Length: 73
Image 1: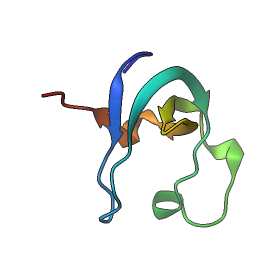
Image 2 (image 1 turned 90 degrees about the horizontal axis):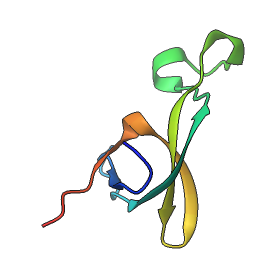
Image 3 (image 1 turned 180 degrees about the horizontal axis):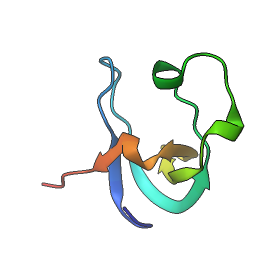
Image 4 (image 1 turned 60 degrees about the vertical axis):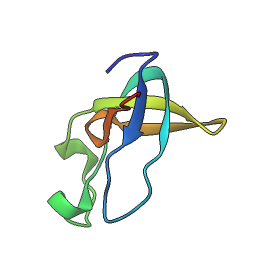
C-alpha cells in the first residue's frame, strides 16, 4: 500500500470498518497482546510499517497488516 490509496480496516470481532485515504507511511512498533501476552517488552520487537490514514478529518496510524484496499465500484 502507498500514499494515495483508499483503504479500509479489516473486520475484527464485529467492529465496524473504517475507510480512509493513506497520507503517509511510517515505521512504528506495535505490541500485540493476543500474540505476545500483556507484559510489554519493546526491545523484543522490530518496527513495522504503519499507514497514516485520513478518516473523517482525523489522522489515524494503523498497522498496514490491519488494512485492505477499498474496493471501488
